[in-house]
Length: 202
Ligand SMILES: [Zn+2]
Image (cartoon, rainbow, N blue to C red; front, side):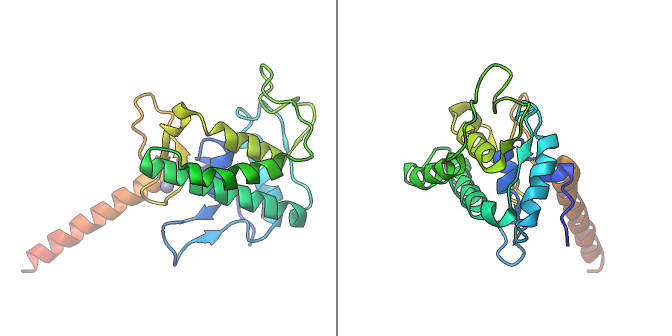
């Protein structure tokens, strides 16, 4: 079954976290699954991310090569990113012991890329040509290492996704209020009603 890459699936706020979130429900070993199990989804994700992450990418589109070739590099970067920054959210600090794996995965993603990044208005290089998805993923993941970004990383208490809280007063709780926030509210409502019913049956 093909995945529909809806806006909800891009609530991480940055390409590297949207990619980390392609593994769903990491907090639940029974229900967790990987949307990149079918490698063809990586190209479809990259296509959608070119639109949803246009601001981060400075309008540069992502190019996904053959799914089989790209999958190992993408998955190792994705998992190293998730491990490093999930730990950073829970501990409030970067674990140095997780950095070599993360940096090595990013280095693999960048190797062979000749992009020039970080010029004014061209954070990922010249938007006239596409950038390899794995190179862009590495640039995005490395950009998370800034102190001010780490301070704004969160884990959604409902679905366990990683996201950046860019709200003015740093008070965003859910990856997506419309999905996870409402689900949690509905659960609370259901529990309250059940409790009232049980109490009145006494
Ligand atoms: Zn969520």
